[in-house]
Length: 423
Image 1 (tube, rainbow, N blue to C red):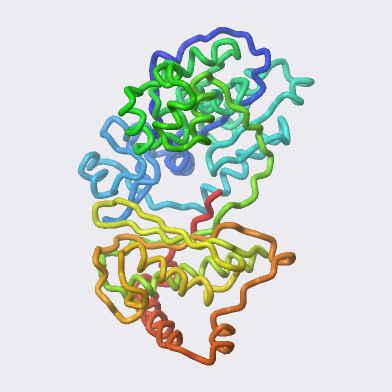
Image 2 (cartoon, rainbow, N blue to C red; image 1 turned 90 degrees about the vertical axis):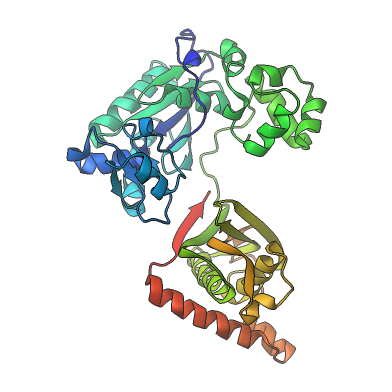
């Protein structure tokens, strides 16, 4: 569910010159909700919201739910207040991924130059496919019609000469539309948009740019590159934004993007400051992540802990290991140390049942810096390290977390932790 800013002024006819416009961005419309409506036709026309439970957030909402103010990442409790007559359904990722695979198979009938960004969107480079298709827009029209015919789902398509403009075009074509932006007009197109429209500009970056009087892309285009670097504090980001403000994007469509991280996280039923509960959950997450790493023949060099607090604010902190690993025994003690650092706690205090300085709503662990286990020296397990050191207090640390983990399993069941694969 896209929440990117849209502007009615740019959803218009920009001309019909398709020369060089060989990049398509396809974005499924309200994908999770649309999947549910497709298998439950009786829900058509009703506000369908994906997300249940008082502690959950909205994963998607049908367009009928949007006028009520329902958006993705909104707490489900808030969505229920805004839309009391909405149909609230649980997330069924297995079903959505299955539909997604079939949808991408349709794209594959056009070209193999497909970059899958997520379960519901992707880029296509159709330059080679034009030998047997009349034009890029003809391809886009066929995809939209074929996806709707086969699956009862709609998608929006952006057609442009680069990935940035194609994505912005599909966003502003929603729902169920297609927008072509000729190469000669892409600077004019992007400079009509608010600066938040550019992917990668979040609230913090937008706030810094606003201090320089920049709220739209036209104003951004008036800044020199060194001014953008000073405003954002990043020369790399400054270069990207300098080009983006002129409608330029040098990125290529990459048919295969290696997995970047593997993570696991869970939201507690009630916010907790109990260190045993939080570290127990971290252990469970490390278990899940390590099992996935081994199953996929991968190792990880970097560990990240993610926390969400009572006010719904997120925080993350990362640690890079001396050697790659694929075991929970190595990941877990590092995760606990990261937790302590995030909360300003003395080292080792979380292992002794301390009260955390801030209640935690959600906790999770992810592993990145992935490598092939077959060619990567793997760090020894925690038990191996203990054997080398001749003991220590770590077994007690692990026992305490294991007891907390048992409590979590009893309370939440086998599916307590949601596995999320981020690419």
